[in-house]
Length: 121
Picture 1 (cartoon, rainbow, N blue to C red):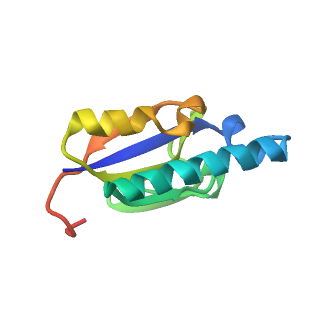
Picture 2 (picture 1 turned 180 degrees about the horizontal axis):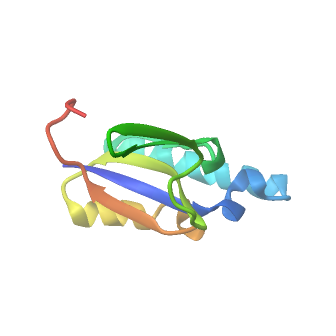
């Protein structure tokens, strides 16, 4: 079964915002090592790091028209910072994977089963 493991972070916790370049570099090395181990287990499907929310655009419907605005839809301290897509035997394993992600110290990690059939979006 596939699971999206969503990494949330406060903007101030984003590694590129850290003043200590060595600390940020060490964090990214940890994340890369985690991804490599997950790949070696055969459970890794993909992972992506998202740009900061201020680079996003939101599209929503208002009556008969769509409205496009800069930035995220909601004002919040936490934002979606990235994700892993994994394929594993079940929810217990997906939670085990999520608990071992180094980014847990940046903010909450959400685990969500992927619905629908593979490749259908």
